[in-house]
Structures are given as structure tokens and as C-alpha cells.
Length: 120
Image (tube, rainbow, N blue to C red; front, side, top):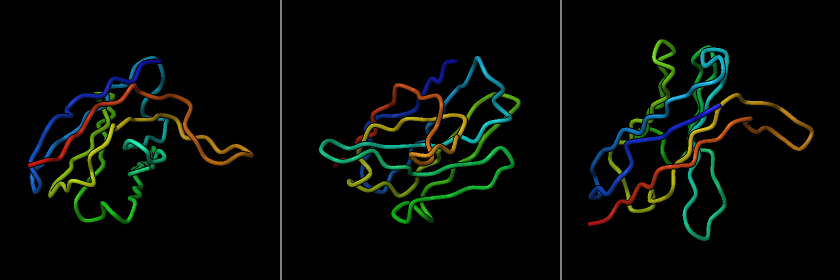
């Protein structure tokens, strides 16, 4: 299984970026997917998720600014990020195949991440 993120970079506050995550080695369309982020000194945070049926969730801090989507024909997950703020600076990672365990909800497969830096 491979998850490869792309699309990160440096952007000014108020700008936009679109992250992509290409998945391979598993049945992409059957799996719930998610985008996480982790800033230095902070815990990893689930930013957004999308189920195999297309239902979405967002953390409150990105609602109205970020949009998660998936293209099952291309085995690709997206995160459109608009009106970016300095506090959005983090490493963003995609995750595939949501599972519920005794310890909580997590994902089976993880990408290595892409850096997003929002700075003037």
C-alpha cells in the first residue's frame, strides 16, 4: 500500500492550496479517508475525513475554508484549502481505510506527509 501526498508549499495568508493523495495497493473506493496535520509541538489533528459513501467531516477551525473530496476513478483524495491562515502551518498527511478499535478510531495506512507553510 502506498499513499503519496503532493501539493504542499509556501503560501501567503489568504491564499489557497490543493493537496492531493494518490493511493495504490488497496481498493481505494471501499475505504474511508482522512487528512491529518501536525504542527511542531502540537498533537496530530484530524482535519477532515470522507467516507466511502462521500460523507464528510471537518474540524471546526477549517469549516467553510477547506473542502475534502475524492475521485475513485483516479484513486485520489483531495483537500482544497482556501483563505489559509498562519495557524494552518503544519505537515499534512493523508490516511486510508478508517477502522474502529478498542483504543479508538484510526486508519490503517498513512502517507509521509507534505509541508504547508502559511507566511507573509
